[in-house]
Image 1 (cartoon, helix red, strand yellow):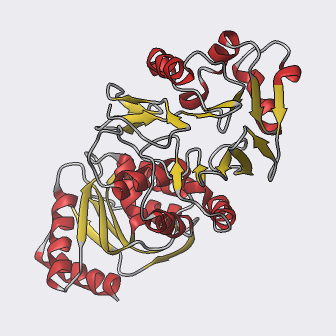
Image 2 (image 1 turned 180 degrees about the horizontal axis):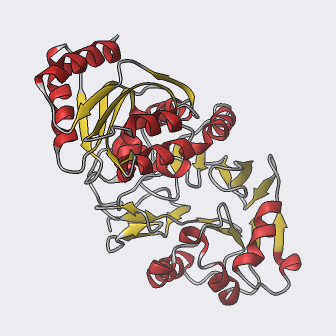
Image 3 (image 1 turned 120 degrees about the vertical axis):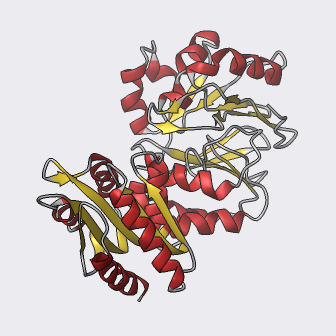
Length: 388
């Protein structure tokens, strides 16, 4: 892993994980993931988070090197999810005098993960607006409930103007991966944090009052330049606004016939001047990518074969994921396919109708087994309506 430089007093002690197959046992991470942990060295020393069990040994080595013979005074617990908090017990055993810093929800949940003796004596409970002075460095605590667990909090270090943002502004990908931030940060946001747009908006409002020079998230790179770009992306995402102009076609095809109809629709849309058309085969697409693109674009076509008198399961999985993540403010069209009783459109509409501000346009295009020349007229009508 490449060296991560924050400042003379604030060190990075996290680790890259390039061997993980699935993050949270569900998200494909082709370029791995980073588990970020930091340490502030001052008159008092604060460790900012521990690390996932997969990288315990490397993290402890980094910690010992940063401490250089000193003992830490505080462990700040911003988030109790095990990819960050697994080694709380390790630290308590290794440094019996260390104080644990968290909020009331932190200490309500902590015993569910760890049996820490004399917890009341070693905990420092903070609330929104409280501070912790380490010497020259001073931490301001910002409660961020449901971004994306109830106990989440962030810290603003006023001396170096750094926001420790917990899972906020995080992304998939190891730190030595050279890739665009937006793409993997967007996939990370909508799949992990996306349900909680209202809560993210509340945090952005608090952050707007701070002079932030760097953002240190728990996954992904430290953000140092052009911070307005990242904050603007979070503002768009958390308002469920349209980020990119274009049409996303999400297709659940069993034998390829529904996919052929979608390919024809893509061709028609491009001929009619659509700025961008993205077609995804849901049976083979990473579902987290499908969720991401469904939020990214304001115009979406959902197309599915009929299976067991319902929609094909990849489509059901996508729509239920979108519903769970508060999908809203989109214009959508429907394509259904079936041999004796095309019925997938009904199921898609039933789920979509439970979502906020979803405009389902007509016509619903019904394909009987394979695309016919007579169906192309309906695809043209659908294209005209979605592009209005």
